[in-house]
Length: 392
Image (cartoon, rainbow, N blue to C red):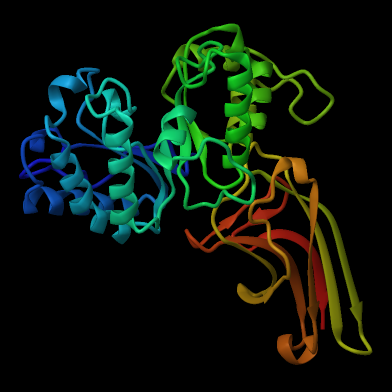
């Protein structure tokens, strides 16, 4: 809650296996005025505290936590526009840890419904203000494809028109019924167009939200197929517990490693990206002291990776690393694309490494969060995945 003297927790509670945290900042205390300097400092301090978790942040600014937004939100759109302008600096200052910014500050629970500012002219002003304030340094998302068309002014899109400065979508009615509680149109042909838009957007901007209820659409195997089609990167692990219980109580039945495990575990492992090394070729010429490397990698997760990632060969000896960059990358690599070949040609290895035996690791390194991204193969460490040895 934004306030004059906010209490910022020294430790942020979270599931230790999670790499994303949802942060909701309620501005209701300032529904009739600009944010005060103490309130802005408190929000800035909150972000500093959140940095200690090492997680990416899904951030939502709102005026309501109870479904009574028409009572709690500002009566004048200029107040909201002013708050957006004031918070632009804080957002830009923390762009390196913000995974996604959800919504345009309005609506019940910040979900862009139940607001007096849902008209197209207001929505366009709010979106333009947010884009200006943040300078498009973070990914943003709106609640439905209909709202997306309104704020962008685009009725039809092609791959050439889209880029990651556009907003994406978030969905807090996922799998609840055919329209996902108003997320998509009830008209089947229009719904297909909206799903096609989502398929394009998920190649550029993260998509996720909350699953709802126990309708047939949320049955485990159907849900996983939907997540793969729509490119789901994240889900709220606390909501809806009824849906999640269905997955926990349903076993996977296939010939692979997941056979007998439950679908909740399967979903956890496949949300976002899941990289698997499919092939390794290392060839060394003693005559030229040159090594060539080819790594075949596949993303079998539901979605691509959305931030820059470096592919590296790491030679390790006595806890010391020597790093060689590889050509090619895994950015935007999706499940449908199959494998991608990453290559490297390492020359003058004797001079660069010296004598001794080295373990060779393949490493994917997140340049946004400065962490090693483990593959789904065995043999992972902070240095990457062990793929061979070299003796010089």
